Image (tube, rainbow, N blue to C red):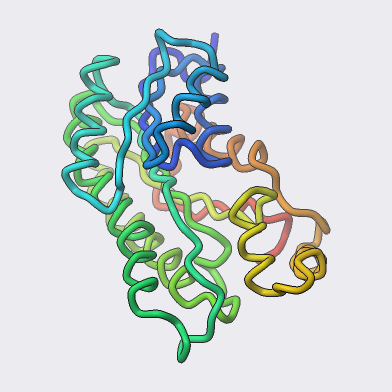
Length: 255
């Protein structure tokens, strides 16, 4: 018996490290999964890698579009008969610049994807999850949603904002048995951190990585699987009394 047998999940940002790893784990635990992302070629490759064509499908989706979110939910329901789990995971890092120097158009883009994206996904998914007598919504936030970093104003703002969205959605979802929580990773050893390391230290990205690791009591980055394991717990019925919570996967970084 899998921990997600007969469940249906929609994973936005499904072509990224956290999204694809979590999707693969969800399928392993019995779920059917719809992957959504802007990168169609990566979606195809990940779907083939997972290797369960009857239980994995994908759709190109710009999460900053309400219409695209609605289409992703609709395709999930059409493909698998319903929706039980939403992982609102799509996100971008923006740029590493001071507030004074931060480009306004980049700030807007980060907010559109990282904040409006989860809002549109939840808005679209709520009615379908309610039809299944409840389920689980997980939003990927960050330790940047719990503390400041410096020179990451758009990303930090967005990751704080989705915690507020989660709390509102948890209040509204509870009468419908829809649980809503955030997962807040520390730096994760994937593409996004390579970008940020280069942003903080263009001439010596390895030094930036060492500085980040020094801030983490466990002295290492998370890997995608560390984060996926927490998401599996929150998606499963094992967390049936858990809603409205912030769940750091951070090696003690915010302790």
